[in-house]
Length: 61
Image 1 (cartoon, rainbow, N blue to C red):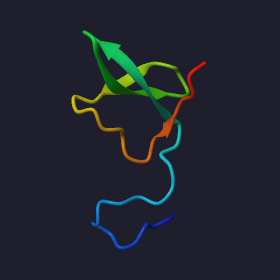
Image 2 (spheres, one colour; image 1 turned 180 degrees about the vertical axis):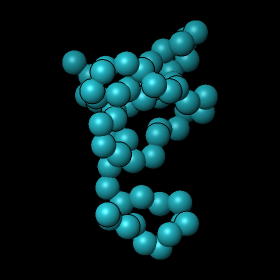
Image 3 (cartoon, one colour; image 1 turned 120 degrees about the horizontal axis):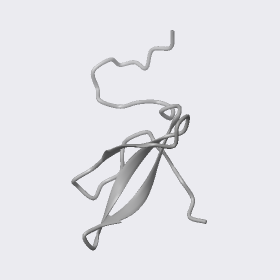
């Protein structure tokens, strides 16, 4: 198992697997939404306008 040292510094090395994020509009505001790559379902949405840490971003088509 890989260990990202130092433990407890709230930083990750490498991307989160099987997840992606994209910007979605809700009530006129843009928020980051996390999606599962396996099922394509939306999993979580952030209230703040910052991105999810370590999650890859989808390109706009």
